Length: 304
Length: 245
Image 1 (cartoon, rainbow over the protein chains, first blue to last red):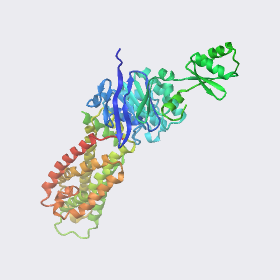
Image 2: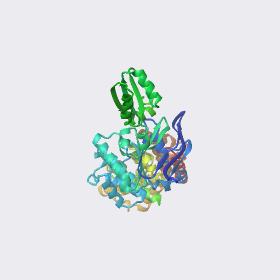
Image 3: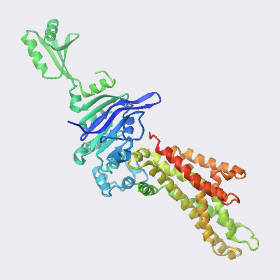
Image 4: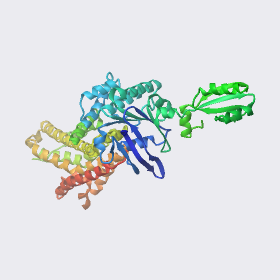
């Protein structure tokens, strides 16, 4: 089966001096859903996004959107793309509606799309206020409305919740979550916050120091989650030998035994095995390696 | 079509901007100055014709001093609104050719300078008529030389194309207001020295003034238009290949 990728990068590389901001990046973003492009600050997310939009040129590699190379097809491809890169670019002396009208005129799109975009981001009531009077959250929503003006198939959002207060983050997150279903748009969203991406993304790519460390569905990332079972057993040596002989991954830690497994239910099975063997179990704890641990261990933020 | 759309968008951006207001304010300053000059001149020689000196004086002050500064100010303001909120990245991510964005900016700057020069011609005529009314010895100056005024507006404006193209590129290339204004002030300042030099004939910031200098008219017009077109094409070439950070 052939999978149609909306975004496909092939060995995409961008250097600034001797520093490789993006190194051999091979993104595969399928149609539909939300792709979370995750990485710590300075990982190369914004540089990659700028190359996806043709704002900067790669030193090597290729960007393909909708199956076509961006090189030489920028205008026709950008007709199907809406973008919000970092803070929204707005004219503070104009009203929200006038800001949309500027972009609408440039795009030559239908006037009705302005009202639709305003309604989508819930700014209809404040549309005739000057943007300099807008809060950060309102500015961000107006930026999103600008990105929706050409009725895009692909929406590229770079850190859309940056600088927002918790209420603003919640509002923006809800808005982004609705977009694929209501407008049939695929969202490519960058963030340095795993919690944010985890809540809305169907696919995830993790970038660190310019390189892609993981790419796949959220379920695939979650499958990397491991459960650690900790047993306290009176006959420690016998228990260790028994579990290792029966194929479990066992580690001794002081007077306790750590068993790594993917199924939390294994706690019951192992406990029963030990008891049936006549070993005295006096302690049992179950702990799970969270997605955050996985993310941090992948990006060297902190060992899990 | 893209250029027309970009131009249409640029016109909306002008709303409530200083760039739009300054276009009307600066010619008025010259008009006020000229009005008091006419009123305070103690004695006019017999047969003095107001229309032979007053409009030329206004246009010369405009061409050598006010217009180059206005060009620097207007282009800095027009492009400053794109630099201030990093608008370039939004504009360049749209399916709009970069040349259309560039030439729309250039054409709006040219339009504003033309408007300002036209305003100067109108207020110059009004000030002249007011002078004729307030100073009876000037009353026999005859009708307003509308055709001459219109021609001077066109010549000065065409000769300014090169400065407009240079300043459009500078203000698009660098975000700092001081750089754009510094170039304008520097260019105008050196024009004072270049005016008497033979090479002053080719100095961009002197071209509008050279319209009034004997023997320099044709060069001013040709260099203004030709140089303006070449500078605009070079600026556009650089602009379309620029990375946006």
